[in-house]
Length: 482
Image (cartoon, rainbow, N blue to C red; front, side, top):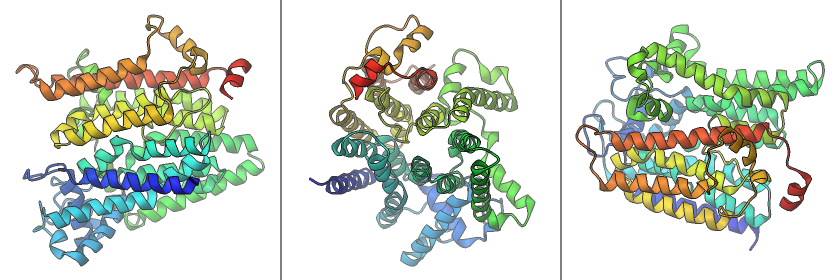
């Protein structure tokens, strides 16, 4: 069967799975007074449609910031505004100011789910398709197999269609940026990633690798010739993109500053909802919350994050090639971008890398009533990755670059860590559902999930840094892989 026919089947299958998940419950359904993320997205449509942009991020009588106040960058607000205009055309009650709070109906649920799917079809899915077809190694069937696995990644599907968000938009823009850089379109890649940053601030994690790769490439080309010209073009593109996204708020510095305050809500601290796996895990051993003030916690967190990503980014600055760029993305924070199999990597690493974030969100899925979709999609993805990507194939330590890894951790047992990781995630999922925690330890299972995820993230972070800084494979291993 021709490649594009297989691609079409993959896309249709991923649409079916996404729509199937969307038929389940969603965050905060029928739970006043705040409801959940579903209501947050609906409320942002209400606000952006009925109020001028200058009031979107300010607390007013018509915009109570304590009730799901807008806290994402401007591009998210414009997306909500577009959806609101369509909603107003279908049913004005969906976005009526004040009166639409907590609105729930089957038709509105259908509309909201459709907006997520349309966004994926326009931005995320095309980026994944083109990336897998043009920037991954292997035969056509291997590329299609990779495409299917990443289109069916449960983490993104459950969060966007179950919990309810639009992460596919920011991930899609970021992936368009990666795709453009891989094809040598550096200016277009800069623009795409700028759009990702202006849609969701979490893309800042990827900003340093993008910056170092492009700057390193300009330096390599020569800052007195082609490199300088490329640097100027990239800088102008980024500035113009940001200026257009922030245009309604640039006339008054107070407006722009308020947007910045809203999209970086540092007052919430590090421990809200136990989503910061590293700090929640460390807090069980070292009482960070008691030792450090909230401000000191944020400063310490920022310093640790910067120190962690600097080695990988500096390596990329010195050696700006596309493979190093992808490794840097994985090292800093990129479990949903398809950093796919290369000669020096095994699919087991990729499988663990994408399954652990899924497991780390288990408490959230249980809270939202998404246990059944979580179980089904996780098992299906695991089996699919094993079958299609040969996730259990044997590779030598040299090919996986585990020699240096074991030198760092001399006590690391010589066992297949893939099986250990899968068993740990499965066990935690089962006990979280079946057992009741002791009364004096009500957060026992969420903390265990957080600690397990943290250990995996730490191990993966170290592993990919080892791969990035290690020497190339021997000629013998390269010949075997080829």
